Length: 446
Image (cartoon, rainbow, N blue to C red):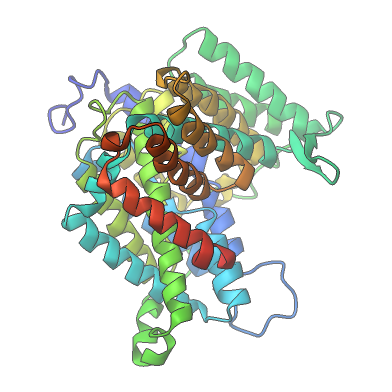
């Protein structure tokens, strides 16, 4: 097994991979509760019957899609990158496609399925890998740092350390709130463990935060340990129903839906792969080894997830928490996948993994990812501007894909005006045009 995962060359061991895999799972386990809530349109009143998806079936689809995605990524691409239905794209699926556009969720699943198939074909042709390797190193580093800022902001927001402010958009949370103080305690504990260079410090910090929450009554004890697995029947195979009525899928509105699924998944995945690989020291110069296999794993997970009954399955940036805990190989992804499968039977335990438990991990990991900025030559204005905008706009727009789009639009402009035309890869011009068209025609529907 060590030779299969190339563990000795990557400087890792079974303990690191298991701890890393568990850490990644705990960091992204929230999706098992969040995805069913979003896709079922929970909390929205007066909806016609059948508008939202069955929450129990989505829970099962989410867990199984994550399991399959993690297994394929681990065995085929040998990366410590976990997959699950993506946050953000599931909101687009539910609130924009189903609720606003009025497209049935069954047809929306067809859009996810078709985007996954298109991605698989692009990956097999080598085009996706070619595009990723054509992106300049400085922008890849900016993407990595930007995602670090983004997940830090997500952690701060989810734990109410940062809250909405009508005057300034954001502001500091209420430090009289015990849940906020629990998050602060978790951050302090994790920082101390990391400063002491204790292996698995992030994972240990999450466990300690959960235990403190349970001891103080801030986190409820699980009502039970084992729960019944809901039926998958309400969503399984529904993605194929739209093919019986071609008029539902062969129209401009549905084309926009597919393009948006394609765009968000492509660049969120590309950004995540580069960020996690950079954090784990797995990049070879400016090239991501086995990029084609990693991208195909993502495509296969999306296709599988659509058939099971969930929105786009994609690579998770929370995998960087596992990398920070020591994961370096696909074995960690396999551990994460097994945890998702087991979660089907132990779903009541997931209520212990609250935002206050995951926030310290996201915040600390974000700080580690920003370290990539040291490799960017900030004295070169033509490089500094697109890199800065890429990094900054991710948290400000709450979108990894939008941050990438803005930075990649400015890159050819600054490079051309600086007389560095020959250094621009032809693919970057194509991406410049695509991103401009994205903001003109697609973004308003997101």
